[in-house]
Amino acid sequence: MKFPLYRARRLRKNETLRSMVRENHLSLNDLIYPLFLIEGNNIKNPVKAMPGVFQYSLDRVGEEIKEIQSLGIPAVILFGIPQKKDSRGSEAYNPQGIIQKGIQAIKEVHPHLFVITDVCLCEYTDHGHCGVVDKGEIQNDPTLELLSQQAVTHVEAGADMVAPSDMMDGRVSAIRQALDGNNYSHIPIMSYAAKYASAFYGPFREAASSAPQFGDRRSHQMDPSNKREALKEVILDVEENADVVMVKPALPYLDIIHLVRENVHLPVAAYCVSGEYSMIKAAAEKGWVDYEKVMMETLVSIKRAGADLILNYMAKDAAKILNGVKIP
Ligand code: PBG
Image (tube, rainbow, N blue to C red; front, top):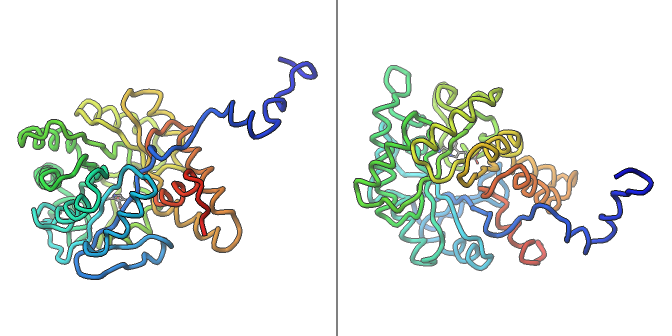
């Protein structure tokens, strides 16, 4: 393989040949679309920092579900914005809470949509932290009980998979035990296994109204400088019987996605988070980058790094391209 006898450009001659030798492909089955459900009536609130993303009340979410169905997106992940918040995040595990009612509303419109729920208290606590707080500190073990109740009520309402995002120690096995104890041993857990304390979550905290009222999340989410620790966190979750492990965020952490892919045999998910989306959208709105091309390149790079599934806010636009529909 040496120039001039070997010429690498031969395989890039035209699109037919390029497609024949293409190594990675994005497909509809890779996409998981996040949805924000809000208590109230007739609400479709635009999230300012995330153009094209809305909070929906349950009487309006049907429109969105029908679009997701017509595009062939197989799965959604739900986040809830309750009317009342308190120190223990009671609405998170209320069987009549926004997510529990939301799952039923969604399944009525589209029974075969695969519904994943985010399990965490931060959207439901008045202090905005992911767990029970005592003397300014997040209490690990008392939080596990509440997360378990939250997961069980989601599954009772019809959730197909639960996704704990809180980063408390031991939550995967606590949730597994609670599900099994309630005859839900067939329900998989997708753990946010290597979740970094990232500034890229900024726009999400507006979308989910979940910004911490004091302090930050660095006592439980990971330090962005760490790599070995990601594998440690992932292996802990594998040992606790997680079914899918997630890396989050995605684009600034492609090395971590690759590392996890090389070291575990479970499906790997990557969450291309709010800030990643907002940056692409903002640059595209300014005319500085081509939205469709940057989106598709971003998504396929996450696959190339090793992700099987990509949670992302571009899923509807990507699905349109995959289906050959022009984005207006
Ligand atoms: C916690 C949760 C967060 C995200 C998903 N689940 C926020 C956080 O940890 O502060 C972020 C997702 C995104 O930025 O798109 N419930």
